[in-house]
Amino acid sequence: MASNVQQVYQRAGPLVSRGHTTLELLNWFAVAVHLVNGSLGLVLVHTGDPRVSVVQPLVEFVTNGDQNGRFLVPTPKVLFETSVLRPVVAVEFITAGFHLIYLVQLHSEGFRRWVARHIGGGGLNPLRWIEYAVTATLLSAFGGLNIGLNSFPYFLAVLSSGVALQVIGFVIEMLNKDDPRDAQVFSLLWMQGTLLNITNVGVLLYQLFASKTHTTLFYYNILPFAVLFNTFGFVARASFKKWQRFASDEYTERAYIVLSLSTKVAVFWLSFSTFRTLIEDRGFAPRTRGVSWEAVRWTSAVGPLAFIVLYFAWTLAPGKTRGSFGARSRGEGRLASLGARLGVLSPRKSLARIAEEPQQGRARWPSPYGHVRL
Image (tube, rainbow, N blue to C red; front, side, top):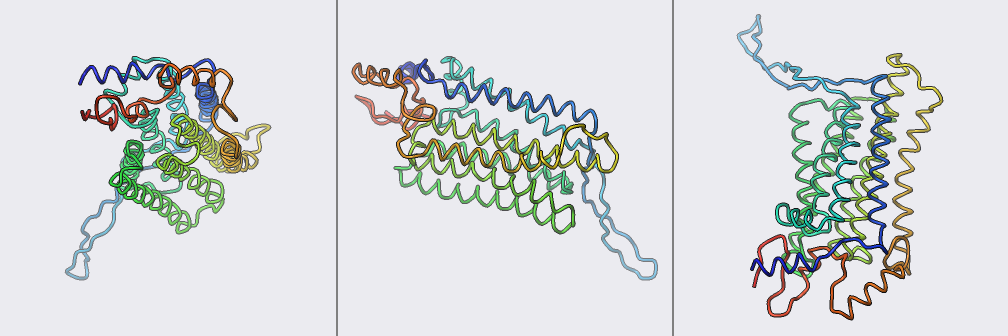
């Protein structure tokens, strides 16, 4: 059994070649954007950083002096105070660090073996779900604090549901659409993930309108937040169904990078533009010269959404097969042709794809990350 596992790893080969660097370029671009955003955020935070209190809604009995009765009265207790904007800045640096790890994974076969043995997963980059469990959860939890959802139990609930949502994505990538049981499991997990998303967005909307806060927060923050975060579910569904180019693990990975980059850029600048406007209008921070925060908010709300639509419209257009933004490159075609003649698998296939192909002399492997059925 050990020798079979080693053969799968040896056949995996490098995930990138000279003729194909789109995945590398996207990761490097993401690193650069997130580092620039994080650095600008640190500068802005030093000039003004709102804080919010996280409270525990406790209750105590109060005796009525006129009547012999005791009543429960809410007595919220402040547990701690936290910055509004520093967690958003931290997400930028954390994301940049993960993309550097992804670049190492693309070129290091030893590191990919370690990931396969100790983390598992069914896609090209299982580490992606760990990143999302940290970054997306932080954005959701602190986003709620920023509009007044400062209850500590709610804060913990958002943290736990955010991690659970990424676990669902991790499990979905290990399912096989041709297996009836896996298809049923996918439907159940998809429904659970949808309910989690709807519940979180519903609570945010209720808090926003019930507290009669600035309605611009809905148009500029909550609506783009809800739309962008739900696009990940559609990519997961398209990948499971092997719809068009989503049958390729590499294209799916590029799609997730585009969504992640667009979403975090939008949330980052929406948060800063909104709260910079509030604190500057109230005199808590000096005016930022040469910057129109209104224009920043509009650009942050519309720009990433437009980028996502244009990217998928271009790459999924009829006639687009493989490669960066069109047909396969000449070097990639020669490599595939040579591999077909020699009976060697494509060097950019993920370990999951290689393991799922039938092998001579033994039964079909479900995944190289799990147990091996002989």
